[in-house]
Length: 571
Ligand code: SAH
Image (cartoon, rainbow, N blue to C red; front, side):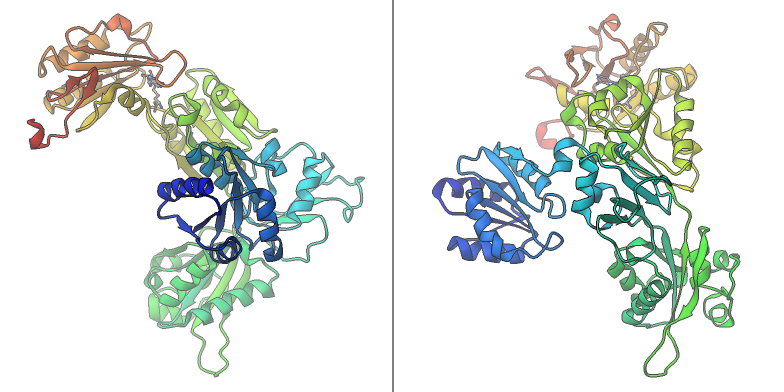
């Protein structure tokens, strides 16, 4: 919840605007300012104060308890000109909140956290939980000091600045050096050291019916602690299908904040384990649950099967085993949208900054180069090298890197996602980020052409024989679907569009509206509304999509509108 506080009338008006914009996320704290602030500070994850920064500093000072627990605090001045992230920039989310609130209020966000300001990665934004002296090590990174990267585990990190490197033998003694560790082992952090915690551990659990969650959790915690492993590195809990709904296990996963994965008994029976036993075989049909489930995806058994201990001497109800799984590379397939920066989603932006390698067509890389973290490796290639690009991206991820494969619009629409995923095995993690595809960008410019059922058809015969394309165009014509043509025409390929329009014209009036949108959301954008009969195919090129209406589509006030078919609209 975001607490809102104001003192003056002008502040109150700005406060009301934010409360109206975010009714479900905000709570207004009325009354004397000090009391209101204290309550909001205690009760909310974030607070926006329509007060001077000085006033808020004084109000907050006696309440501060630590970076990890204090809410994020944003101050907006009376005039609503600035939204200042005052406290908890990263951990409290105040930087993001200042940006968001700034957008609603038309205020300039003021972000002073060094890492955000100069676009060096904040150590707490590298994609993994982090422990230790985040502020101290970040300062060392920013100051350009030589920082040691001690990676015991090779989980993929974003690009790091060039002063963060594996330690060299002749370097400064490591006690004095700022250090970034990547490890799942617990250890007493020294000054100027942070540890990143990748999800390297899989905990296999078994439980008899009705096993209490506390017994399961205590066993898991004891097992990790006994082996010197960090609970922050548990990536998943694993068990047998039959225990999918066992409350003690389900709740343990929830409390650890990790997914529960389950496998069939027959599958688990096929996994080689050091400590099989008769009890689970009789109960669920596999000689091992905990060890087999933990080992299912491969890896090294670091804690063999253990049973819970019960103070009352009754039989143990839970078993557990821990496996360190091999590091997994990460392939993000990221749609960049049609061109305009503000049609690139925030999630796409985050993924570009989560990567250490970017793979894509040179013209798309140019679209986002300024967003990349310094040190990001860019693998560009020209048009036509699709297969190679897909293979490169997957190979880089297999090497254990964080890769972003980029494409314009949506990267899954006539683009790189399918060739890449056809190559990818289940040995890498894949994350898809949707983008605004050309049909939608064009639709928004034309009006509402896609208000009823519609298809996209690519007229490129590079990957598809013309007979197949023609069959689909005919089917769309007969089914009265609105059609958006991608790749409508290129230099060597000019008869397919007129032919397709003729096929549609067999089932639609010559006056059917047709939208022609070139370079949607790019600097030389053009939008034309014409008809099936009047469309000049010469006005169409490869930067264009052509959207043909169905029999109900109308041009209304210069806009293309396909009715949803409601009877009251007379259609
Ligand atoms: N993945 C892309 C499509 C790639 S196919 C997407 O989701 O949008 C390439 C075709 O997309 C082009 O020939 C053109 O028909 C269309 N296209 C892509 N971007 C466009 C834009 N900004 N304006 C108009 N058409 C576009």
